Length: 300
Image 1: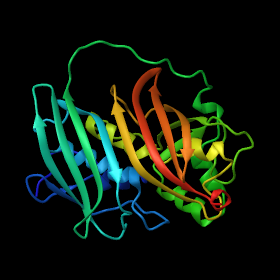
Image 2: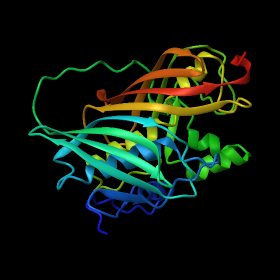
Image 3: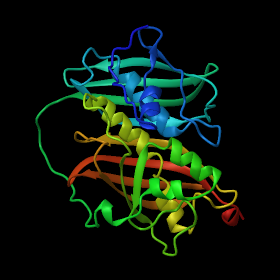
Image 4: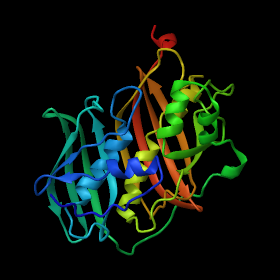
């Protein structure tokens, strides 16, 4: 079947693989299949991939996807996805008003729902304007690159991230990949962008989908930092449970974005993170994510 939303080609990896993953095959009027999953050491589908694919599937139900842009997505992860199997997306048209449209998206593997999302779209319209001011932190050039870190570490996980991760991330308070930081803090800041520029003819819909893909990589980090945990902590168990994004303004993942993340609470093996995303001083998005965070030292 044809694909209504144009996703341009990239010749640069790993961005090319990301864009290919977002090219869903239309199998019916509002049903789609994602044949390619991004590789993951865990063998589970990366949550940010499904968030982004759900954006693309819902947006494809419009004749002009950039006339009505996605402005919010509320999603729940119900089961772990298997990277070896394709993902089917079923879209339900809930409403189409003069200004707003709502779509319900289910992602399925083996006829079982693994993910569901409510996506809301709005026509471009004028209105009241205000925003929070960005935090006063040094720019990305002041901090080490995750790309350089992964390429310099002789470890299978680092080599995997070096070859497959589409992002360049710069942690203001220090990275949590190899070890926890000494300072305890429930707030953290991360600069990030795609390692190679997105194609010049990328739509705003695609760019917003890539932001959803990107952020799931570090949304739980304020919880880890507040408890001196790291991604490499032995026997740590992490998973996204639910995730909400509000896109406020146009964004371009090819250029630096600053995420300010804060965790107001963690309990019962679950933690919550609230995040603001700024680009060139402009608030482009807010996100909220609750995730499972379990570590043996906190299990008793």
